[in-house]
Length: 179
Image (cartoon, rainbow, N blue to C red; front, side, top):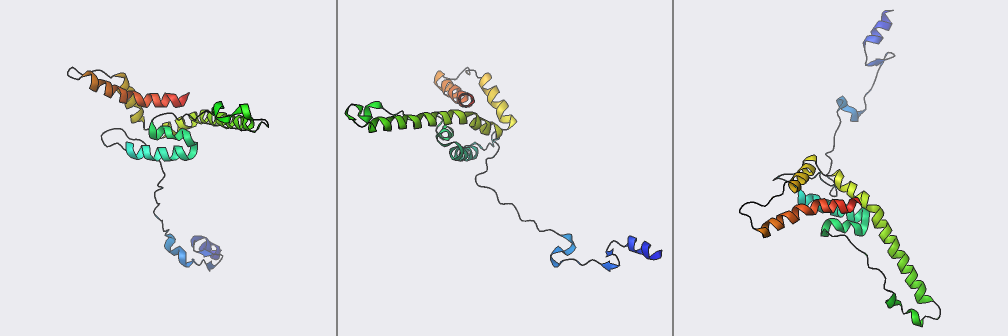
């Protein structure tokens, strides 16, 4: 009876034998490797004087270009990419007895329409990607800046127009992605 009690009290003993530690499990210490920062990681956009807009925009542009192709150029240029529609006059359909030029034209139109459809389908995804990395402060600041925009008493119409245009770009960019 005393043997059972002594075995239960000593946790290091297992059925009368002492457990042996592996040499790499010394005192149950773990070695943690510091995580290396992913260079393509998109930072959360911070609002205020110490914002990280340039880093955010660069990382967002790289990710958008990688994931959404031509649609991602919207981040870098601020303008929606429009693929060029094939011009029927470039295919010389009048002198095409075998229909090769007509087939080329139809194939190019198919590709053009596929690209437009793909870009249209990816708009909500890009919008969600941008929204995902905006801080709540950034969202609120963009709304309030645009809503409370007024011309100052000593501000010229030109400087006010420039300020208004800059404040108007961000919501317009996001609206164009939403639809």
